[in-house]
Image (cartoon, rainbow, N blue to C red; front, top):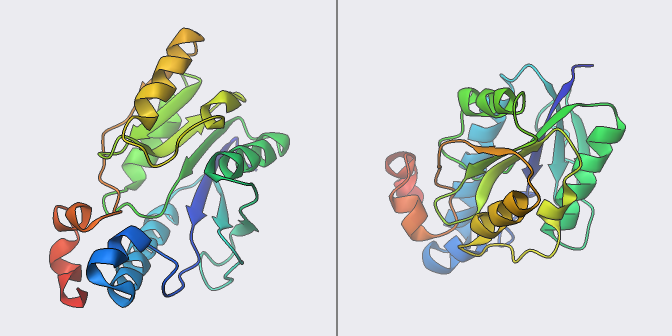
Length: 201
């Protein structure tokens, strides 16, 4: 077992259940195809990471995805609880540096994830800021679970408020480059995958 763990949160790819904000504009079938493509990108990138990995599905484990990789189902009343529970399981298993990412990032790369682990050599928390004001990556070396508590998810000041809270508690953090995660048609249109995926819209 390595000392580092990469957690990937994935929604089960079900028609009408993924990218619902995007689906309001382009329809459920197109949103389904977009998310399917994003998950493929995520799987290809994370398979190149040498750290241990655990894939957390939203509803049910899909064995065909990430073969020979540990898989679980997300548990918790909201996103914060689900993330906290996954970190807790990782720390209990003996991992010293844990990073969690989502699966709607067209520009995620092995270099960004590795930079996240590197940043945890000098800081207890690391974030990958998203263009919408949230974050696409969070990593920790200690159980700073206040990050996950009493937060309004999917708001444009989520990361800002979280960083203020950490600063007040004098908890060291670092930031990676800002990426675009795909939630709306505007996100998709300015993304790096738009030209290759626009035929499904």
